[in-house]
Length: 130
Image (cartoon, rainbow, N blue to C red):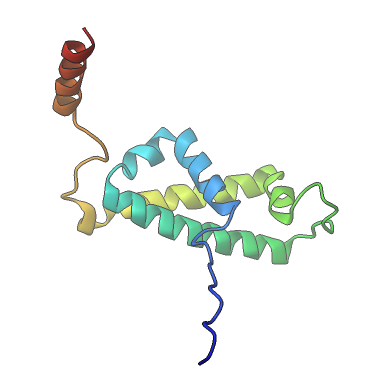
C-alpha cells in the first residue's frame, strides 16, 4: 500500500496583493460603492488580484529593484514610487467599474442589511438591553 501524497496548500492570494487591493477599496469610497454586493465583491477581488499581480510583475520586469536584504520586498520597493502606486490604484478602480457595469450583477442588492433590517435590529437590541 502506498503512502498518501503530501497535502499541498496554495493560498488563492498571497500577500501583499490582497492587502493592496483591500487598501484601495477602503480608501476609495467609489470603489467600495461599485462593488458592494456579494457577487460583485467576489468578482472584483478575483479580477483585481489577478490584474494587480500582472501589473506588479510587469513593473518588476521594467524597473530595477534592489536585491532583498530583509528590509523591503520588491513589491514594497515598487509601491514606494508614486507613479507605480497611481497605476495600481487606477487598475483597481478600472476593475471595480467593469464589474459594476457587468449586467450579470445588475439585480443583486447591496452587501449587508438594508436600512429596514438595521432599524429592526436596533429596536430588538433596545428591548433586549433596555
